[in-house]
Amino acid sequence: MKKIGIIITVCVASLMAGIGIGKEVEGHRQSSETKLQEEYVPWDRKTPKPVKSKLKDLDHCYLCGNDNRSLMGLFRKYDDLGIICVNNWYVLDMKIRNHDDAGNLTGSQGHINTTFTGTGEGGCFFHASPNSDRGISDVTVSYGENSILDVKFIQKHLCQDCLDKLMEVMETYGPEDEPWKPRDLCLVDFNTLELYSLQGNYSSYYVGDYYVEVDDSKEEELKVIAVYAPVLEENGGKAWE
Image 1 (cartoon, rainbow, N blue to C red):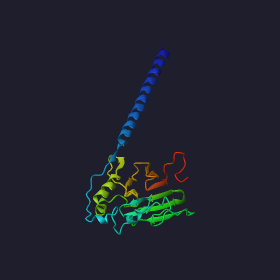
Image 2: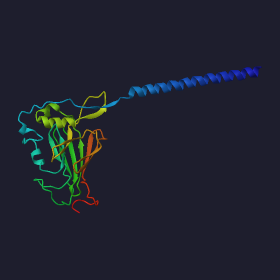
Image 3: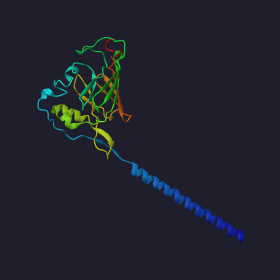
Image 4: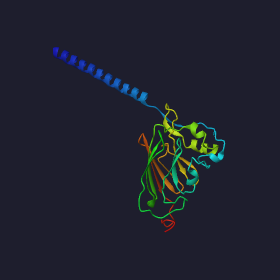
């Protein structure tokens, strides 16, 4: 009888220990699930509200006009793409293809031009390495401390049509509890003056005959690669072959 009592006691003790461990594991699981729920924040698209232009003389629009503080009057001659740092209105010619100042395409240059350009205090910093002989441009943009879009500034310098185009490409995607804070960057087609997003919403897209790849995986910089990639002929060759 004593042996039976000892065996029963041991079994009960083991059962109670198992129940205790089970409760501890279940409690830990519920705690982990609760923590994950608390840490999870849904993401959503943040679309800017309509903005009214304050520019009175349309000829001074920085994008489609001829203001002497903007180089777009020169760049509009080029069949190329550019990157605009809006707050300082600095326009970088990506120089995907070789061309002269009049926009005429030129022959091979036999070298790669690497440039480093700052856009002013607190602005973006550009590192550009175009290989124009092969129709490729590689640009890295380091964000400045003042690289969040300044809407009040650009309201004064773009006509309503151009301002609307700019705001359309300033849509962002991020945690729903964070405010709309787009970077002051966009891509521009010099020929058409159409603008394209550099907010990280798209990893790649086509602009006419150009293929554009955008990498925003690093928090403080943006990498943009553009390649001249026209549609091939039916025989698979290029138009001039």
